Image (tube, rainbow, N blue to C red; front, side, top):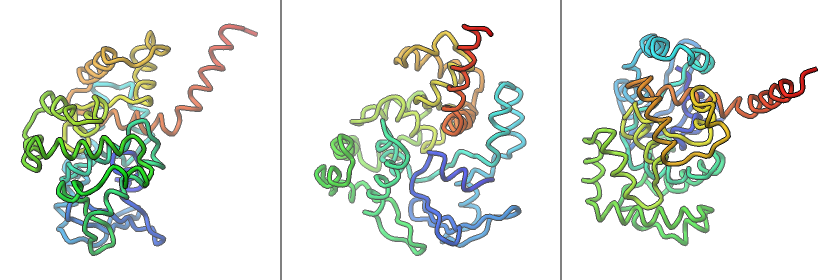
Length: 291
């Protein structure tokens, strides 16, 4: 379990580390201040350790997960070994996941974080200084002009429209209904919302609705999956048809842990993709012009 690796891996955006090295964060009205050493995680919270165990998914043992990966896709063993302690979180607040990932489209992490914190700061402040993500009722008071001034750009319009659409669909009852749906039912339901396409819907399914078979495909995952399994598509662009092709194939191979395996590929490409592509270009040139 590596808190730093988990909280900076692009699945949640509002955890922060203070000068003392503590991780400050929340999930709904639950807050944590966490410290990690080589042997233990300690800290303070307004909830018991069972709530943290659920959030960090400690009920899924690392050894069992690794065994499933190696059995189904031994070619991924290096990616798993290179990211020790990485886990996919299980938050209880789906609203934060929805609007956090609405900020992520065509965006970089250093811009997503201040956007989600801007939204989060509209919620109530908790005892450890973190903020509970605001309710739908509070988000309904956020204007497009405010979000544009805060640097949200075109996403401002979609966020305001998505809040209105969720209210039209039933508000909190609709959010609760999402949690009862299968993956195949959930992602089309999410794409009803303005600004949410297939990739963002898959992010919400994986990181907010506990659908571990969801495989969000962005540039990083497209590069990884085509490199590993579909070399004929390496120079092609990502289309809706190709999205279905590669995600269905990866799901068929990895089964119920496809989304977890995806996260290791994502982290690897974020850290190593640029150097790997440069190396591939050199290798290709060497093959084309031997000697």
